[in-house]
Length: 321
Image 1 (cartoon, rainbow, N blue to C red):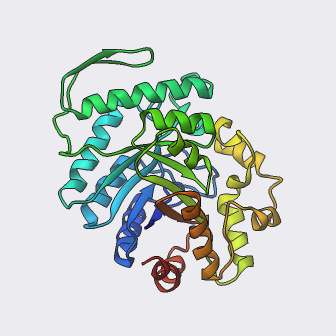
Image 2 (image 1 turned 180 degrees about the horizontal axis):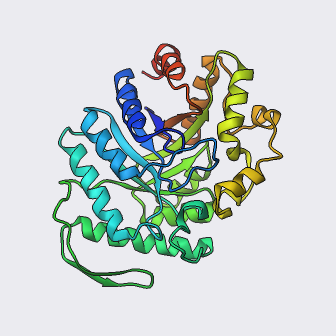
């Protein structure tokens, strides 16, 4: 049975609106919400980037039943893993009081967000080694023990968390290629991706276990032309090929890179559903399930979230209940 989630798009909405969206998602019967963790938006049109941990404090207090995840945090540069451990332990403790599950998605990050402290942006293989070490630090601190550690990448001295959840959250490692998926199986408690990436099979074949998450991006509107125009204005960055999303360092560079992305490119893109027929959304979710994901969360592009909520309440969620 698949669990369906809703994306709290922190690149597009201010923090109080994100809290309200989480409440609305809970009311409609979504199983979980997942929030993005960005220092910058991808494009200036998106125009937001609130601090994820403050927003999650609001979500934890305003909701009662819906589970919560971060998809995903990069705890290797902008966040030292000791601070990531404290932030996640606090949020997990808040949610635990009402029996809500917290999922901690982690990844190797994008230059857009992680270079802001002036650190060198290392190649992916180095970042993956850093991530594995960071996860070990986080788990050790979650135990409540006093931690002193001098690793290859991170130093922790006399650190102890005094606010910790009774049960530690699963750490779900993000991957898009087979080598990273195999590595995720080595040190992750679950798997995180975007789109129906078939590397979830690689993760499981390598011995990976736990929940598997992936995001479906849609733009629901009354007609497809309106949806395509909105998606092009706010989320054309998702059409960029290859490694650009991880390597470009400013939203201005993303805007330059997307100058050649047309509305027709968005209409034809496999990465965005713009069809107003609810059955197209149902079928897209089923593609994720068939690919092996048991948690699928849906990102509605643009300012109009209520039309999306109404459509999903009436037409999409019932298909999976």
